[in-house]
Image (cartoon, rainbow, N blue to C red):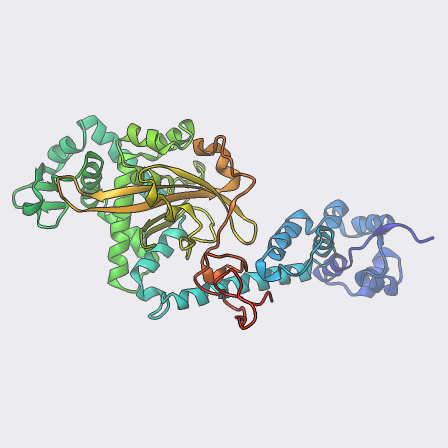
Length: 465
């Protein structure tokens, strides 16, 4: 009877090649025949416990680690790949996936690389279809700056550090207005909109006045004062951060410069250490945090996306702001969210529905086609106005985190939809759900079916392969 063992052919072959040995060399070291080595490498014979012991003695390896090489991580990554909707009509058993990961790690790695390349190609095609690549990404300053912020997880520790120090000085001086007067000789004045002529903030160096539109609420006034201070005191720090990106045009550089000045403003008003402690103690309750720091709902939610300072990380969030027509005016990402580039267009996401319930927080569990789950908080925010008959702009903002973090949020308490999440897509062209009645476009790479004899409920009938 043949001795029991495990099939480790690909790993045995890789070990032999890593050691620079021929099959004959390894056979001599293990005192077995070269033909048996060949059979084991082709998984036609198992690697017995005795052979593992000989491997451990001959090559000083941990045979437990060797036997478990590739392990659960590779199997887990493969499970994610096979959940892709494009493979939905193929039945993969969990044992099959585990067997492939353990017995054929090279093939499994090749599958992962091909799938990654396929997803990137899908995103690139979607970029092109949406016009983002017509003049090249570098030619689109908004896209270029979003990529710049996303690559750094919307976190700039050096800017946080200098802003935190300045915040302490402002507190000692008695506030933003007092600090501007004492350190820069600037007097803060609130002026009527007709005098401001379309400006929310204007620095008049000649008269040493910092003018603010009187229609701004307190949170907006403080933000404008803090942003002006960032321009006055952190110009070199901001410029160094912008220069790192090596933008290809002035529009991108200017937009990035403004974004980082706004980042500093938020960091001055909501210093990193104090804000990071507060979000945990308040369970990320945005309204309570807004009252504590004197900020708006949007300012507070935006600041939550920046808390990824090494060693002091908090929940990584995705943030989006859209108008009633679905136009995205802000998209920030501090995690690794798949909809960071194109997300926001799915009408099933509540961020598009909260306009019917103004200023009310709506929570929602979400599930992407590949099975990833997220928790969403959405609410409308208003800008403008500030006086009778003045125009306002209504937008919706949403914060999204991965499902694993949801229990740390006050909003997930007693949520009823955890076991029945809303199925959404990144964008219609990247979503392969066949039965979605809210679809506006067919998915990339699918054949549209004629409806001569059958008209499906979904707007498009398309092939399932």
